[in-house]
Length: 160
Image (cartoon, rainbow, N blue to C red):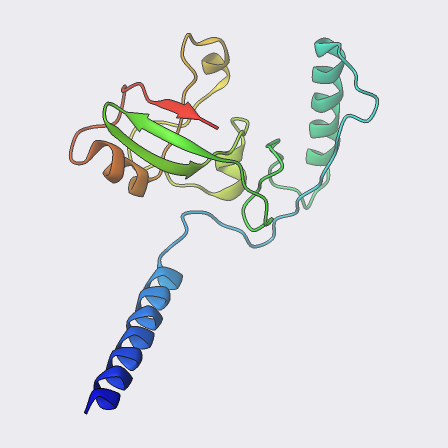
């Protein structure tokens, strides 16, 4: 009798995990990943002049964008989706804290990956000089940190 109980519990646990992971697999990820290329570059010359770097990156962007098959060019940190590379940290608001993946991206990232904004807006060039750094959070993180409260305009803290 006890062997049957243990067998039932094991089978129940396995099938519960299978259902959980299948549901997680079927959730929409919120971005388009087909027909995307990732090109890695690092500043091997360690150029410190910001103007030179900005000119170089803008020339690089325009050169790549001039190719007829390229729809959008975006610069981001090295932890792009599906790269097996993560930048993680905590996001906290009042007494709530939740771990999250951090992505440093430019304002073309949304167009390049087809990310849909559910509330608020995507950041733009004017936000680069803002007093506080704008962040975009997932709906899952919004629910964990803010609950039913509106997240737009709130200040969250981050730790890496």
